[in-house]
Length: 408
Image 1: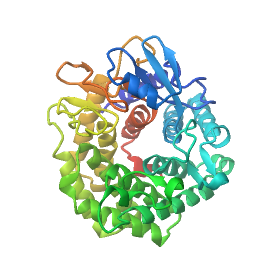
Image 2: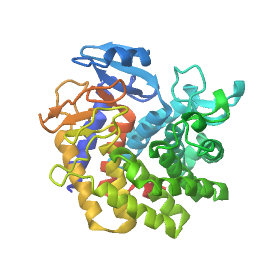
Image 3: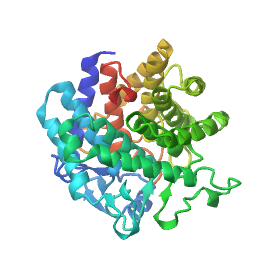
Image 4: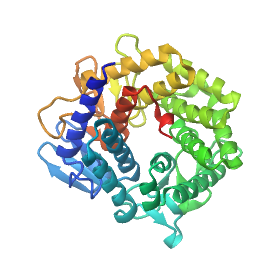
């Protein structure tokens, strides 16, 4: 795929970050909000505004202003990679301001005061109770490890000692939480640490595979046997239930398996990754390149729906990881079909709220953004992290035939 075309799409997306209002001020000094939420014909608007009560009204939208640690880390990664791809120093400056916000201003980094866990990340700056999620902290941990290759940043933010502490706590939480009971009753999957524990249903790869990803990356820096034990527990479980996973969960599972395969150097993970890859590839539409939206708990579903919050945005980096690990051209071809789809639907609406972004859902039948809404998913939700930053990161990786694993 044309490298300049990929870069142009990323540059257009960075304009959206600057002009939509999702990052106010636009230099990153006060972080980036979770999403732009469009209001027109949005059946989930009232519920979303009630659930996420910090927002700024705009003409045709509200900016959901709560600052999430994972969204800010993902945006910082995008800006640093954009700086490297373009040579534009101002992009690196935005990345550093986002990190300054995270570590010095936001209060998102928990310090252990009041019984909270030290060096873990709170879900959002407006959440006034401990809310520590496996998926969000997985991205925070991974990106801290990626940024530790920069001596200035490693020292300024104490990235390695904080990453090791976070990995230790994530591993311990996983050991407490995953399969902690004798059956799979929902109550048995909660963190026994109670109100100060970690959250996330570890039966789903959305949670457990992202923990695999982060712990495997940590194992590459701090090869502690307990990390390997927890990763293998997850992957054995995921491998033993291959028929259970929808397109979204398969994408997460591939990413986690790719990191485990790379850093743990165990023959099991090579086979595990290939089995997951076969299942994921088998779900791709050969004509459109889409993976059907199936994550019904949080987004509308259907084969005609392009879900960029939970599915294709993660299927793309998953396919990149598969191609890197196996060298099989079919995975590269599949990734290129996804990129062609994403480039074709990148928003050209003249409104700065949307121009250059990927909204949360595109309808292939009507050839426009749509398909319905939920209070966290659907067409009206335009996420900073989880959608726009990860898609642009994947496009920048594609320019260099790399994958997420190669960032470490």
